[in-house]
Amino acid sequence: MEDRGKLRHPISVPGRYRTGSGVAKDVDILDLSETGCRFFDRFGRMIAGTEISLRIGAIGPVIATVRWCRQQVVGVEFEKPLYGPVFEHIRDELDTRKREG
Image (cartoon, rainbow, N blue to C red; front, side):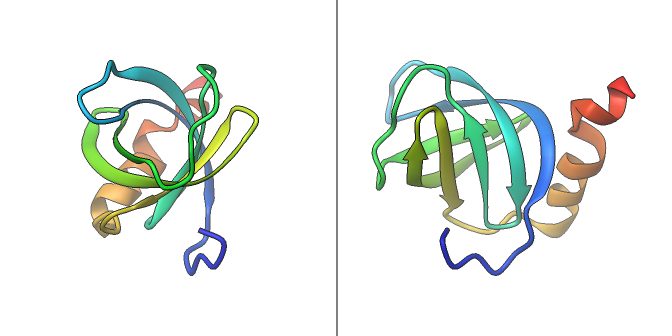
């Protein structure tokens, strides 16, 4: 995601990911673009190149590849870009910061 062509939008949305048939782990989605996202993973470090299945709120699963991991923050690139109205729904309706204030 170093050469991303889409603008990142700061959000706060609960999510879950799993690798392969592993146990789903809860994460906090920190920002989102149509082609990827960044999330906080309190469980530890992931390895670049790992394929995951990700849910963003109730949306998904979205197949993504880990591009980088710094401490407990992970950047992923989606296998396919999010469909415009789905992206807008996540950004405009699921962001918990908008419900809080």
